[in-house]
Length: 586
Image 1 (cartoon, rainbow, N blue to C red):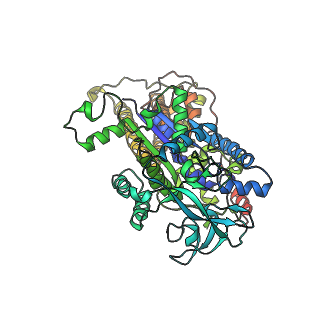
Image 2: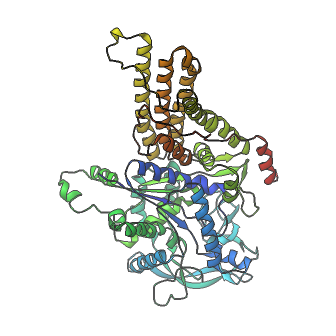
Image 3: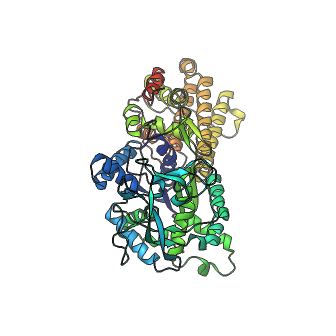
């Protein structure tokens, strides 16, 4: 059965460069995409640049440019960064693109017909100094719940969901002047009426990260609030309703629909039906009617997720948009669009023990990082040490030690010394095992038995790794997947050392050749297992051994001619720690 796998990566705001916090939260999406493709599933890995709204408009005003110029500039920068990092998006688009705008307007036309949408006059934050209405997040003040500084949409300290008018002493986050509120009529979605459906969604969310479950339950328990669908903003998608021609669809009510619009673009380009991926129903001839009335609901839901699965990958601060806002829009629309299956929500990443701050330029910008460091090295660090299930800190000393100790010292060392040994001492061809060993050891020597045992145990170990690592990847346990693979890497290095091929090449050539044959098999499979995580180095090994990325055990035939082998990873000089810290003014 072909599985259809949607992987939606969060859409970064196109009002400034990407920093390491963005990448730490988004990399798991590419691991999932590469893994599922290697399993021969149909993958729809989608994302794009979030181009509309106040953040982009304010940046444009500050630079004397149009919002489109600003958003297009950063969209191109994002696209290049993702390319260099090896992201394999099936569609990376932008919310200002015609495909997205058309989809969103059609979606909203239908949405407005539902009983969940109503009209309401409401106060909207306005800055006289900036001469513009403000998005909620661009209003700051004092949280009425905890008394600490907060944004107009949410208090990061206590987690309370807010409206700008709830804040004490509200000011403009751009010019820091006091703001006023002007009455304006807008369309609202009655999220409060969807509480039962949203509660049922989170209660059945065994495949969501714990932070997503906890945050969503908290929002529901505190009481869901209705949200405005429209805003008095010039830069955005025009509201498709008579009388609202001068208003825009509120950014939160259109950017999350990018997962659908981008997925539709992929389906259209492949000649596939979008409804089979996102329609939420079973294909013709399947489902309850075809399976019979005796099917349990839980069994059918499990079968449904086996056919189609939707992952959403993002940071902690984006949880409510994927577990409440997006489902609310889909439910209110009423067409039966599929709701999120798996939420892969990362925690926060700090930098050298301090909070990343783009306003204070305290960040590591991805575009600069990629100019100085290997993409696989960066991918490995953020996947092995990132904020997967708890907050994590990026430190330059840890990065250098991690690269030199694990990636280069363990994995790269094993690959290079094994293949270089074959090129130098064994004629550059994958050696044969030399002796055919029967399962009846009665006439075999001790060495024969050891060779057979090594072969059998290593094959079993590697075959099991595909199962264990694959299960962990699908569950969003990327660190655990990497750790079990690197346990095999460390064991492989120990095996090489214990077999001492540098000695046996002159003392027992048969044993030496058997040892190196086994090392080649290990390398082929380690490269395959690591390909979703560190694809560039794996591609090199695939080329050397003439194999592909399919997620299954590999066997390399004796006699395979190896090309000249290059070093997979270069050692990082420890002096870069202080050099990089000085860039941060530490």
